[in-house]
Length: 102
Image (cartoon, rainbow, N blue to C red; front, side):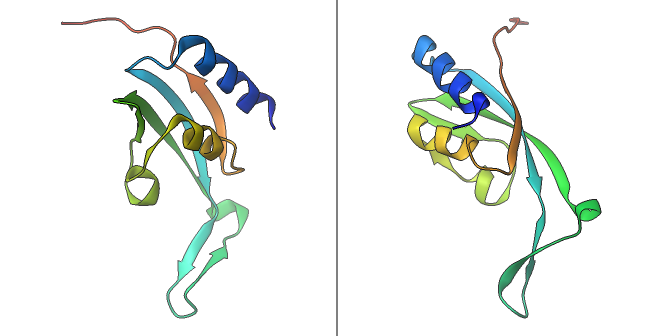
């Protein structure tokens, strides 16, 4: 288990995951789907893309920004933590302050 995941588990356990908890993270996509072979192929490092996502906890589920498989997921906290532990996820931040504007 990575230090990031340990920290995230501890923070979530402390907060009991309140609605509107937000987590920001980067996801590196280093594969491309080859339709002819119907498999994912690893792309050269210079072609890999890193995208920043956010997840928000609402109604006992985590919802992600973005499109595709990740954007369509609605995960329990346990499933969310397992997803954050995958090697394509880096730079995980728990948003600890917010300012109400209206």
